[in-house]
Length: 170
Ligand SMILES: Nc1ncnc2c1ncn2[C@@H]1O[C@H](COP(=O)(O)OP(=O)(O)OP(=O)(O)O)[C@@H](O)[C@H]1O
Ligand SMILES: [Mg+2]
Image (cartoon, rainbow, N blue to C red):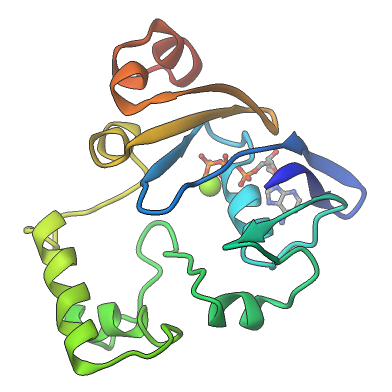
């Protein structure tokens, strides 16, 4: 995304956010409470329309697309906390995440589930917003403060940098 501005009603929350995720990369977006992380995610999946700026995915312009069209292109959001379907099993909840995947097949489903269980062998353990966890699984990351990206680094640098402690208090 480039120079994305967005907000709620007349209240600006994001002030020209630019970031990129390259193919095959895991990237963390970190920041204290209320700094704009969720707002940025909502903008990326089309729930909020950016006031200015552009969002692209695999060379396609997502900026004006509706959320369901963005989902069909393969952009998904895993909701924070435990916003899952409590009446469904863990497996069923995970499979729901594949519902928008193009060309989904039994083989793809098995592979994705295997990946998830590989990364989260103790799935029942609570996986919440946790900068340490995010840093342990990402390749790179950004730190956000008051709607602005204030730091960008590799996960190792983020783990070791005093900036992370200062900005996140971790
Ligand atoms: N629906 C909304 N209407 C108005 N303001 C909102 C709304 N949702 C969030 N905000 C405000 O936008 C700012 C950024 O909130 P956001 O939820 O994006 O932060 P966050 O970085 O995800 O925080 P957290 O770490 O607590 O999840 C905050 O000031 C928040 O009060
Ligand atoms: Mg949030």
